[in-house]
Length: 466
Image 1 (tube, rainbow, N blue to C red):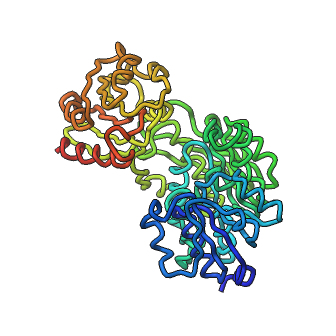
Image 2: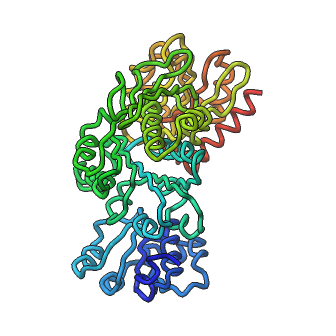
Image 3: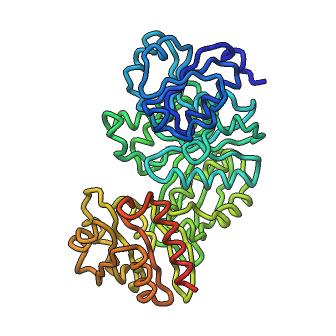
């Protein structure tokens, strides 16, 4: 029985938001003997099969809107990440001294004693860094990897896992609702404007991210990107020891690697941990290509080594990491041509990162771009075309805009659909070249989501590379 069972037994808990995290939180509270109310602005019909996991449970459902009484009379309110933290009902609950927790706070309080927690946040790169850290630690100790990436923490707790290590991707939405949640090793990868439709200003967004460091204690580790002033300041204000990662010569309490394109054997990474000799690693895995992934790898190495992974296992994990689907994912190689699925690149900034992962030289990238545009200009991509892009194949609603803003830099062909673009790319690409899907656009004009678009590209690539 959990040490928290008595505090929740018989208590009234309101769980807000019935996506996967909220449903897991409700089931955990029920297991611990709480009287649970679940509430969501969506109706029962809109929620559909999502409620199946609560079928037969003794749960009060308040659907189609929120009732202030469910918040003010509760002993505890638990919030799903997708629910805005500024709801008036939350403020009413706080005025009555009712705790309002994120789902990750609830899950944290039910972890097995002695579990070590690694928390990773940032605007970009957190999914890859979390997955890589989990892989490096998983070779050393039983490890759960999830949070904002995949399985919610409460769902992990309900599963009765014996993981000794927990690696969590954490969004600003999750972190704004933490109280005692503590990561012994924590990393903020970067902070750039994002989710400003929910956070009133960049400062508020950064402060939510900073909760990850604020709850740390002496003896913990706070890892920050050396080129991100906000992350550095937040780490410096923590009671934990500050470590950094970035480009340049080796430095104390840091991971460092050279800037620029990797050499033929890969990119060397140096690690200097407190009271330990300097360590050297080599990043040579194509699943971690690109400058952004060199930063992700440095952060993950710091996290894993500080959490105990031996150096030999860390290097082996770097070499074996398969990468995440739809993020510069190699999906086929045939006839000397490499096919790379970067369907997750749904905006111009992401395509900038993806295209820059391929060194300039002889023209070697057949680039597929387009879809439903987001209104941002494509002009920033122009600087990456020279010596890199052999041909640009456009698809989807925004194809005319892409061609207008990027035309003249490389031959451009309008292919309308992804199928047409892939087949044309197979004709154009020669041995040693790359076909890259990095759309800079949403997928909704032709696909349900970027995953469906990426899977379609995978199938085409495997067919056309035979």
